[in-house]
Image (cartoon, rainbow, N blue to C red; front, side, top):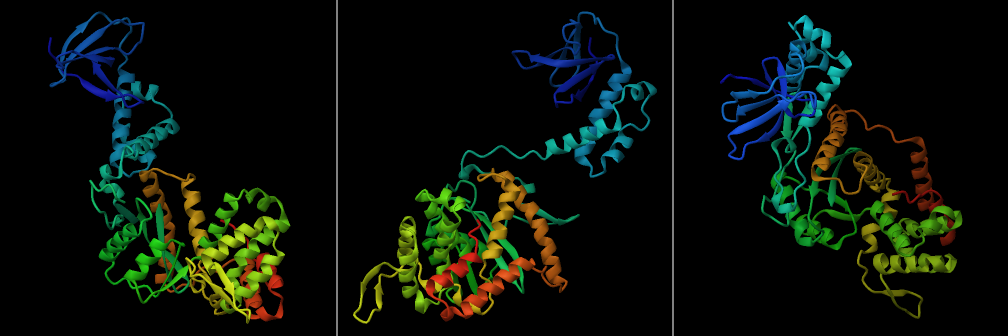
Length: 447
């Protein structure tokens, strides 16, 4: 007995076979791989079985008698629903349009057993969501294979552009941490690229810069603000010798909070207002005139509680230089710090009302945290999240291109900046401790 049949797909995506008004579900495959065995979908109640040829899908034989009656309406309904799911993936039409098209010309019997429109719309949405399911998580960097849809970005309907601008290639264990490179244009701060790196070595940063410059040969920044990493600083200084390198205030504060965490002081920082204020006074050293740094640190050391002295010592050694000796005239001799004062001081930038990058970096950091909700998203979730973030950035770029002004900052932040600028401009009018307390009152270490 040889005849043809047709397959449909269940709600869970599993194959079913329709033959002579009955629906069968897959049971197993013969040992030689030539025949597929099916059973009636009426579990337990019906013992009918069917054998089909895997190569041709022909029905080879039906075994047993069905205990249930055929239901042509339900079969037609299942077939149209299967067609609906296929078209949901292939078409960009709305769920309602797809449902109307899929059930046009359906029989009365099918209409009587059809689910309601809301249920069918959920079928469309589930099919589309399943189609967008990300690839399997790669086992290593070398084995990452990036599908085409993850390499492009749709900036507007019908207009796609490259989202992956550089890749060292499959098989590279040091392949593609996240570095967000922001570019400022007349008050607008826009992401220029996102780089996924295997580590924080200087060589890796050099490779990253080479890939970026291959994509943008004319890239020539006047100033670069970055994290306090020696390898990162060396790599960018070498690539862009004319650019002014600034340590980002956001990352300076972040490093101070890491130190507080190491010393098990964060709980007290969060609950003790005076202790929190004293901690922020250390960060306030970034607003001190570099020429007055030694004197202010000496005054601060007398004021701080004993528990914060290791934090001040860390800051002094890393960002100002360890104290070697004091000359007879009172001047201080220090070792060369890991990060010189000129790199991280915001004194001049505050006076000149220049960007201190803290607001931009903090906003970018929080946006990433909000989008992903986890510290270590998968590669595919990361790329999808960055695309969503980029859609918002496209709005900012459109405003810039149109000649519009950046959105005004919130009034409370403008007032904070005004107060900080007033404090810095009148530095000599207060004692060092008063100055740092004033800065700390206007400067929350929010990361």
